[in-house]
Length: 397
Ligand code: GLA
Figure (tube, rainbow, N blue to C red):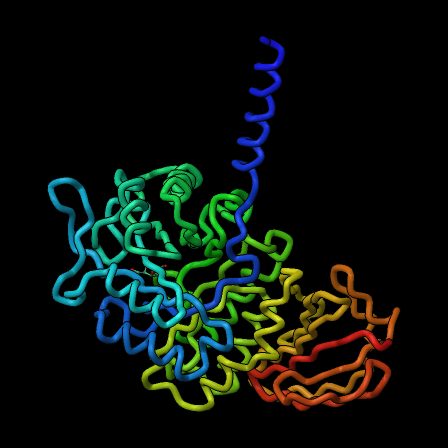
């Protein structure tokens, strides 16, 4: 009898520990959606967020894969006597649950923001000391995604702080994507797999192609450099996050918008649009919804691309794709055009498991939507300043 009981206990313990160790099935490809911070910062309200939800559907963004509609900082104003988080009633008079219901009714998912510190970066109440209570509230509201920031951390250990919120979300009983926003300070790529589904690798992206500002905010190029060697840490369910997109925010040229978007796809980055899509022009929409380019980002193998070559401001990046395919990106960071003449097979290009000299591949230009020959052919590209050429290589049968 005793033996049987011990046997049963062993089986139960094994099942429980396997479940605890197993990663969930959220974010198997990089999350895609929209976030309010880059265009609205603290100025958010329910009317405008509902309009964004409507437009995510009517513009075709949802069809292209943008799934999460995430509000960032400034929806919260205080706590009641029982510690429950209080919503800004002026800007969100119907409450967050009603907003989440509306977003769900459009077939989208809803994301929210909080902070591991006592206050958020905009000085609103953070979740320190209220993690489990807040996670329960989010689950009741129907939250599907939490971005969790690192201001006013008061010397906490980041790994422990993020693990606490991760446990709280798991205990809430609702599947919630957990986005760690600690700006790469403690190299979260070395510890955050299994705690969160994505982690910021850098300070905030600024609205510029190049440059670093006085508080450490980085332009597109600086962020790319900081992510170039992190490819081995990314994979299904655990992504490096180089921050939200600035595509369509009025400062980058269309060439730069295209390069920014392409490189985020090569980096297997979460694609969170950050523009006011109520005022989006056709070119911006065309960039954000290029399905062939998005497919590079969303490839199910989940490999982050890496920099194969850098000569001055000229770079070649390679991303391994499923079914033996690969993406190759020529990235011109220079202020001058770059004229490339190449026979790809002779480039000796190799990255991860891709070796271009071993096979012949068909070549497709993903911005021109055109098949342009094979890796045995001589090709010529005139790449404008700050521009890219993105190719997909498919093995020839
Ligand atoms: C930090 C984050 C940003 C944004 C703001 C909100 O700076 O890194 O992405 O969420 O806080 O206050």
